[in-house]
Length: 640
Image: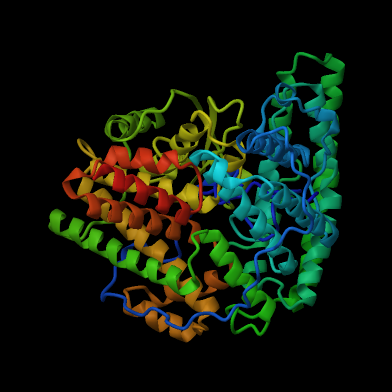
């Protein structure tokens, strides 16, 4: 299983994800890195509606349903182990096999493999593959795991084990089903594409000894092969009629070509020269001569093979320009497979057991709620807030973090203290990435955490950025789960970007609700509601453009009625075609978490305890929203 596992900078830069070899299906997006979303393509000053949106599609998309895969063979039972012990063994084996599929995956999840009985010399050093053969190998691995899992009697497991069982089972089923969509997934995308994630993968690569340094150089030498494989995959997509649009390839704003140019132009001064040299200087198991040799080889690889691989990829993509598809949605493009792929990916990304119509309805309900939040805050302010001169900060990074602790710690369950390092994004990547990102911590070293910031000195809302990425957003949620006794490592490892972003968006809302002192809560709520309104609208646009055949003219006219400028509306349409799922993680997860929160609060009335609710929600562990919803319903019943 050698599929590329890109570290998807999940919205708010990273985050959705973390992209890979074995276990991750090509159509799914892991969340090793959680990032902050870049601003939606609607201008802040025009995002507030002038009329209440009411249009919701009623016609259900006609994607061809697929039956749940049945086990291909009956696995041998393990009589010696009762169900609970059998599941513990399965959970351990699933985790170990997943993380050891290749070195980059292992490095993302494990700090000290030897302590887990992993021989690092047995782990393949590769960037992965986009081949159909490796895709099939991945499918077979998941089928094998599904057969093993279903041999365990779920009814005899503990409640926590049953949740983990359900999470793993759903991941296996979805990945197996995704195999039929080979070629539909686009790895080269603005903000979160392979071309932006690959340099980050080398930047984040942990070099602790000579072996690590040699492995790093081997991976660097693998870039030409990897990019050649990627180009072949893009040619395959072009033959299918699914190659990216011209705007995505070489548009005047952000584009794949511009991302590649940023790396090409930095040939002799690329940041990876310094980061590798700094890492080598800290090694204690090499001689000065060996250090000099490592540095020289890194410099040669970067300025020759790495550089040329980007040049060749760019040239190959330019040759495919005549195959750029039109700027039209999935339904109108005339490719039934891609239409089914969009439907499948929408449903699996939201991971909630809901149909596209139900997803669209929930998004639009949240649009209305965000509009209400905005107008309520505006009324309290006495005038429309000024979003042209935003200055939401308490000063330094430390001052902002201390403020977040002061106002949010009292309302959230306690987590252990951890170490946090803040690093700035290298100049070559600053135009490619979102405002910030949180690098998910390894399972055996979660006490040490990294947040990367993209030109924080220019971030006029750094307080909200830190609330999203750190305290009390992504960092808080991951530390809560990493430190939670007995929570399945496999369940945590399979955490979706959508789940992670829901909590971080909620953290921004909590900041607005509980702000005090130098920060005006009404202004912060207006700012948050305006941004969330934009996210929900753009996510909704993706559904109607791709599944309900909204033309560009219809889309522009509709969004203009909601206060969006014509340019903003056209940008929304373009983005819905080029990067249809980017904002969905942020929009749907927030809408769903608000739905669960509001329902619990309404049922409990005065007995509702917000801190207890957050504990009940987090104690479920990362999971599909429908599974969490059922657990919260049970929790609500216990409170009455």
